[in-house]
Length: 464
Image (cartoon, rainbow, N blue to C red; front, side, top):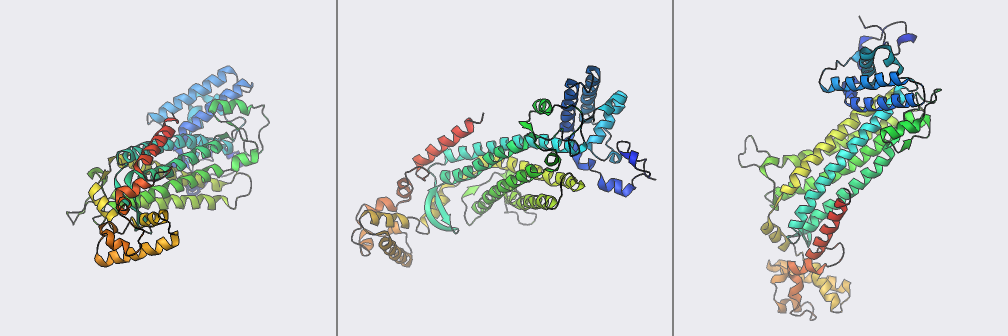
């Protein structure tokens, strides 16, 4: 036998909700994580109602004290969550009424669960964005610190995963930092649109009570109340925008993961990850698997899926609120959990990366990484670039036939391709000469890497 109709809204109904439907439509299983923000919003709402004269001083005090007591009960593990009460709002309100009696029923004056949940999610997401930005900052600090330590460590730079030109490991790491910097800025920009307050829109049309939404917005730290009551309760753009930004962050972490997986392989052998970030094999005792980056790479698809879910959820909804929107929380919550976990793992792991300078340098010597330097050298000597390109191509083919690097050819061998080549050519054919020659803003010259590190450190310091 189903319980009696929900006392919060059951006056219109002549029979109890079917037990299965009750469980199927309830959200308390997952939205209870919003309890602190729900109570925070309710305290601000009650305070505002008191200021405009809807609640007396005594009523407001009873409600605020009662809400704080409910919060303490929840945090002590003493809250009995009920599916029959559907969601976090009704569970909190019932607990409040049980504590303070009929006065608790006045809390819902001038609001609806529609504007209440929209406010709760924004409060929750605002805090989560701040926590995620802190993790991005921590990862950036680790990345920048490692780049500073490896500012002149030479490694091959790749295009098409083929050796292209020599770079430094520090320069490569700072490329990661640029991705993360964009991620941080995107979330800060997203936060501005999250930080708008829907409370006061009520069900969809506002309320007849003399509320002052500016008071509530100020109490909750919102930048301003939302402008339109219909949009206020039905908008989930902010959640989609956040999940889109999260997808980009996960894409960046996945690209980094791919490189870490490659670099730890025996075929590359560029870096070593500490044992605490790896696992072994149950059958092959020699294995040390880079499970953390592999798992982060895999979790990326999960966040992409949540973005698609939220876009699909919203695409056909007429204004204003619809029950469909109950489905916004689980994708959003899992996106937050996945992103925070992935960033935490990376922020712990990246500073602990051990660079293997020898194998990196040896790899840069393979694949004729200084060929472009030879072409640039010939251009400086007066040869048009396209002609220089052809000369160097022939030089490389010759070196390949001999099984040596360009820098291992003697002067006479190089001069057979162009007599402009002189003894000073060997200054540009070395790996050190190649990276040092790219001495401009954004280049891979070691002193430019150190300058970029200083700029990155200054950007981080400016956040505090």
